[in-house]
Length: 303
Length: 303
Image (cartoon, rainbow over all chains, first blue to last red; front, side, top):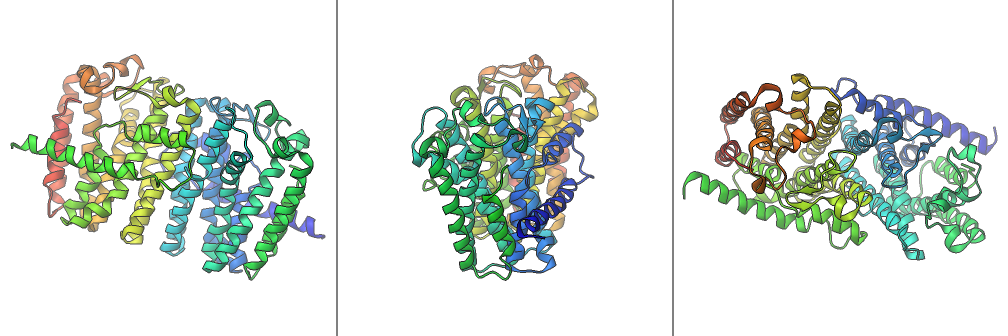
């Protein structure tokens, strides 16, 4: 098995484990309106790469390569997927990007109506924090779990992903500087990648120096991921992406290829990936291999 | 000063303190799109009774009557007001209740547009959990703060307020049984009151027995509060309510007067208030007076 096949195999096995955990992440015994539960599960089960939760698990194991790292990190892995999923549901709404399809399936508001889509998003956002509290119940030290609550609120909230999304919306109204674009990418995408890696590392028991190096790794990786996304939107394969290409152009989105050109964008992905791998070396991890192979995989992906 | 004047005075002084704390609850040094910050502050500063945060502070002081109870409970008081405010912003959206005015001011989406209103709501919801993490930073024991995170996620989330709101939306589509109505009221309103009282009590250092009694107190109080709201919507004074009367009727909302009649609804408010005060006695608090006077005040309010 060559390296890229081994990575693809690792990613799909781990994604499967996460999907099994997501199925039971909203307790069956909770009395919830059936339609709301259905709407939340519809989007949680809609597939995707599960990149963010995989990074939580891989980072926990990179710091402490024992089986309890995986188990203890799983609730937080589910939490970040809930956050990512809620953001997609709300982004797709008619008042936002007005997308009818996501990953080849009708978007939440097309199936459940706008009101239920808004509530499914609010529900997943709230439930992510419940999932983190379950990590504490499983055995993650309470001070570590509380640091993760604080990071999640900050990096997915107003100074993080929500702030990036707001800047993006405002950008469509005419702001197109490279500074604004960097703000959008730093916060809209990269902040959740930083959360995933550092939260996993915290659960693995990372030192302060390891956390700092891993934050650098994740920051560069997250930016590379978003620039690559912009590139694939222009030149990708519609059937692999599960959405129409050039949708950014149609929605007049500010992207890297639009601002600095395609050639420089491709170069930028390569440089950021290299820098992320440099940072990873500085972290002195017991098992960096999975994180390293994820970085390589992302640079070479076509969807 | 008679009792009801003293209570009104206590409530307005405490609301003022909460409003001062809310002003600085989103750190000034955070780099956030100005329009997003403005939208969040617009709704946070739109007034209202501040009942939920007042209950957090009053419950903390009821259990432990010292000045640090007030200080330590303030971040959680701000958190519950953020949750309440986000729920109003999202409820007012065109896809939900489609309200143009709230407390006499244009609603968020009328001022900032729908996309920014959705994001302001998401931002406030996320930031509430950051505020709880700040309580831990201030000195609330980490295990107490983590229990509050878990409670907040549960009681404001899918098995709590969001679930109640979903049932309400589904109810407008034809479900009108008393069981459904009770589910809506229990979760849409009462769960946040339960959170406010028990979170404050946890910070004050409540015993398990005290928490159980206070949960009963809050549950009854929350139901009384919602039935009273339904009544005021029918027979209240528009200028005092800050919104048109009979809006529930126009929106075909399921309400207590609609299901059991006005006379029985008025009786129900009285009975629930009495039962809540009974439960309060069982809690054996060092200073129950404020909670008691809030219960009396709510039963007699006209807005």
